[in-house]
Amino acid sequence: MDCGASAMVTLHRFDVDPNTIDSVFLTHLHGDHFGGLPFFILDAQLVTPRSAPLLVAGPPGVSTRLPGAMEALFPGSSGAKRKFELEVREMEPRVCFPSGSIRVTPFIGLHPSSDNAYSLRFEVGGKVIACSGDTEWTDALAEACNFEKKIPFHLDYRTLMEMSAGLGIGRIVITHMSMDMLEKVGQAECDVADDGKVFEM
Ligand SMILES: [Zn+2]
Image (cartoon, rainbow, N blue to C red):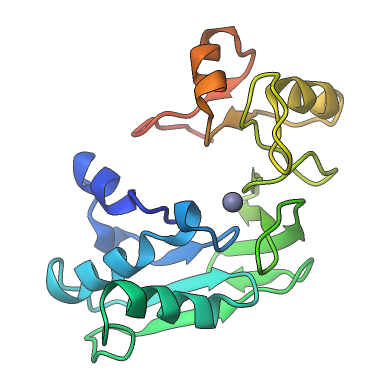
């Protein structure tokens, strides 16, 4: 889910082989959510040789924004010959996107981006994982970005807890936290993500 600007740094830090990742699903096309892909793709080409196909699926616009980002950072890289197939697909809102054993359904969030900003619902192995992406509260999914301080088009902790109560959500994990939220993280009454943290489903 997403591939932010620091994704390669974090993969290396936790000894994750990038070749174990076969698909990247993007919530939206802001740099902190897809800006790591030019580095990921270049690494697959030159550093950690890849042969297996790589799927990148995101909102409409990804098939031009991704090559655009690659060209801005590494001119010539978007059209370079690769030893693996790079498949870039655009997902439509509320249309289930099947990929192997995973079914992904995007819902439009409230987050200004030149293209749709999605919250993503993943169905895999009989379980459902929802990734809010960046959004204000919507009835679809949620993300906590702040504790109480409200920032437009992001979700604060209080609103998340109020709105999600009674919805039957098995487990909430907060990601993408502001400094305000990080300072109060000990008060959170739900799980909080951290680099390298493992959650069992
Ligand atoms: Zn964003």
